[in-house]
Amino acid sequence: MKKPFATLSALLLLSTTLAACNTDTSEPDTNTADNEKPQTEQTQTETSTEETTTTTQTTTEPAKDAGETNEPAQAKPQQTDEQATLTYSSNGQTFKEAVITSKSAEMNYSIEHFENYTLEAEEPGIDHLLYNADDNFSMQIEVTEKGEVTFDDIKSSVTESMSAISSDVKEHDFSAILEHHTDIIQIVGYETTFENTDKVIKLAFERDNMFVTLTIYDTVAADLQDAFLQMGLTIQ
Image 1 (tube, rainbow, N blue to C red):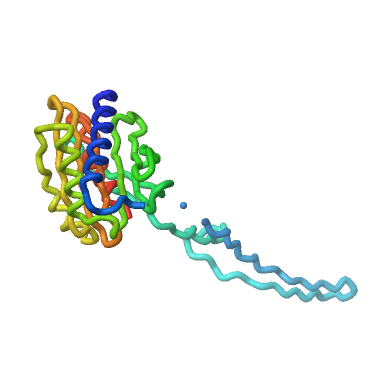
Image 2 (image 1 turned 180 degrees about the vertical axis):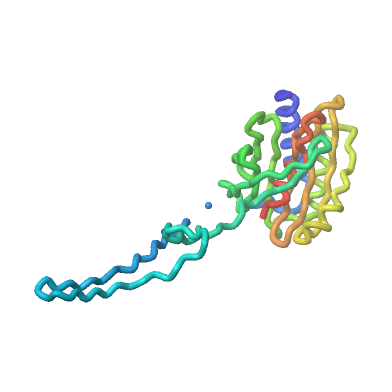
């Protein structure tokens, strides 16, 4: 599968470049608290060896409740915030996994991703989020600041690049995302399948300060599309 995906990625890059040339806009430049051990009360005893009477001053401790031990009390550790998680579906099952945050080395954005994925810079303006177990499964990331292009430009580039790799491209309905991600202004996406095995999903969405384009390389059997999508939606 590596060769088909490598070919598809190269075709998408070429088509994206050609699409950009046809636009009129310029190209974008984890404390525990210390154990508080209460001081034991001291017994003060004054004894006179010269006198026959002995005066003793002793402090007494209050009686302990039944079942109370003699062990000193300990302060409870401070509770820390729970680690962030993301939920996704794959092959009809729902999964919830912890995520970590990575910052792009080349572009001005951060992304939350599962621990078994790695963010790498592919080339200027393009990053890849790779599945560590098999890097044939990946997501290409392109982030463009507003003012350089419009969302219509981004949408045209997406459709042209998808048309360049397949004649059987279908529009994917991502409208439900807008209901749960109010910070996303609009979103559009397309997908195609090769020989009922390999899948390519390309989508773009708009935030207040950026446009994000994602290209997901998946298979019908693995079905990691939603995992990549949920991670991609955290880009900001």
